[in-house]
Image (cartoon, rainbow, N blue to C red; front, top):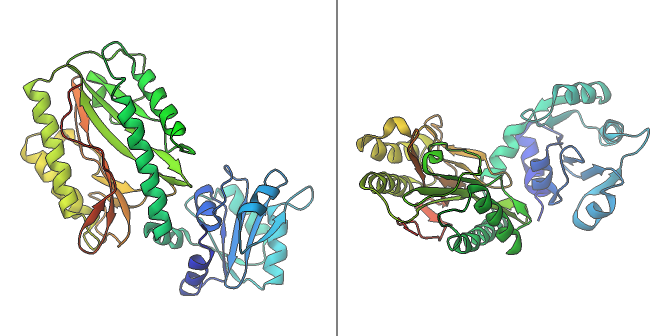
Length: 357
């Protein structure tokens, strides 16, 4: 899977002759080939595609990348040198670059080496990546199914006396076991009073009866991420725990009911936030309703108070409201949604009614 053609079609409307992709996520999106960090660069022109890399990746890139000319860097001919040759031979006058991720040092080096104008063009990629095609949706759904299989197994392991770290480690193992390429991010497993930390780090704390356990995790499959959160109780729950859980669940359902292509991110966020506010927990919901999911675990568009733009059709966003009571507990429930003109398709199938293990 590559997106050379989709990118090339957009160049004229942005007034570009070519676009240079040096960031890991956009390189993968364009080429379908993954390499770490700064180990590679893709150049898409209106007529040709190029991929530059070093000897460590040349063979692998050649096996994977289609419809692009592969050129190898080496001593005396680095990325800037190879790009300069193409700029000259292909008469490139305006080249887009990823202003959101290129370093000042990299920009200065390319500006000095290339006889063309460098034009900020991150938005071009963000807009394209926001709208998923069928192959992308298939990969995202498969990643979600893998995470859900891992969750099914982990529910059998959660009991008093096991640590947060142990649960996190087992989640990672099970996802890899079921076919994941990697984790989307370091799993969050927090219990009891640690649950009030939305992005808490799994610790040596022992899980105890009468506590919530919140697990936020996902995996990568064919380069695309899954993301989900489930909060379960161990042994028994108090009335307050049940109230908090049901409030979050109702808030999530309200946001999902509002989520559709054309609704603004602010509107979707507000639908969920209104439920939490009405229950008296408004000050304990500090993050947004959701974010885009795709090649990266956090990408455009966002369902947040700050986004007053319409959400695009075929976007994939998370649905993850939460309530976090400092020193007491936290609850978050997260699904992933595929937006359509009529509403949304929930890609997450795992049950989310309150579960007491």
